[in-house]
Picture (tube, helix red, strand yellow):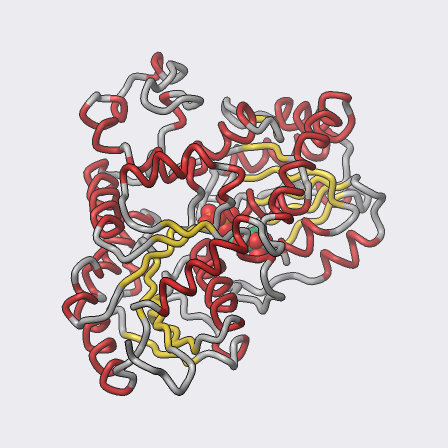
Length: 448
Ligand code: UDP
């Protein structure tokens, strides 16, 4: 065993999408707090702001993306471009870093960097993988070859509601589809990621074992490498922002003026997009619900428009202060605010776990990938939210908001999320599952 006199070094290769950067940096903070020195390797594309993390070393690699590649709305194609263009720059970077830090403990890569399979081992350094989805979605992804063989991934509309025999709780329409023009591109991504996970020295999840014990067992069968469920990441340490967009802090002062549990917070995350008519249906649905709302309309959310310029004239005025629209919010603080009583979400895993941790019940409007699996678990398994399964229509939005915020059904949903919140809190206390799993993870890294 190598005796280290200085802090053991971990190289963390972050993936440049918001829903990945957040848990990537949260994990880096957790490991830093436990005595590791962290070197963040990142692309020039969507580069994080090093001044928010003065305690880490930052190394940038050229990703070679052209302007059009970097703004490709087909995210899966973007992922493949990044994976093919970063092979050489990442290899060069690792070689250089290892010449400076020959005793570095390991590399942790985000699972979307599937090209690293085999590459880091060539340099003689163990590779662990951070998977930022939860276990239920992960198990659904891992069965992808079976689902493809059985033809489930190319079913007709009429079969959408059929149950998936291999995945209890899920319907055909919940399977983790990708928003891409070419289905082979989604298959290539899944294959690459699964192969890279199987050959890794371990997988780290922003998940809570006590909430998904059965799925953990299934995952271990499929991937016989150590699993470390140490979530919820963001509750381990106080956070600095890894936000790529500026968070509009005026939300918080606006929330201060609202009544307890009265506000419906609305955000569809950092990637999902909607068309203009869907945007208008949400706008009218929120307004007609007569419930105060805080709505994140990210530039780029509405296809073909800059921002909210297509709202009908007088719409904002007609809200009479009951609605606030921002480009990006401090989401974790918003969810923790006493005025926030519900969350209309696309069901990305970060948003879902952040909401569970604050006991905020949900309205699900998933788009693609793991979001559909999460939505089904939220509505049918955990029963902590409502599910908008049809096209976006104003009456549906209005009804869902009223039901969640004002009805006895909504009250029951709100009660059911509390034990989950408690589990997510308790697992971090001494003796709790995530606490223990973090100890195991640290011992594992130090054993390399
Ligand atoms: N987020 C934020 N401000 C916003 C909307 C989202 O800070 O206005 C953060 C949110 O807290 C979460 C991340 O962006 O950590 C989104 O990740 P998620 O997995 O929910 O969805 P994705 O963006 O990957 O689809």
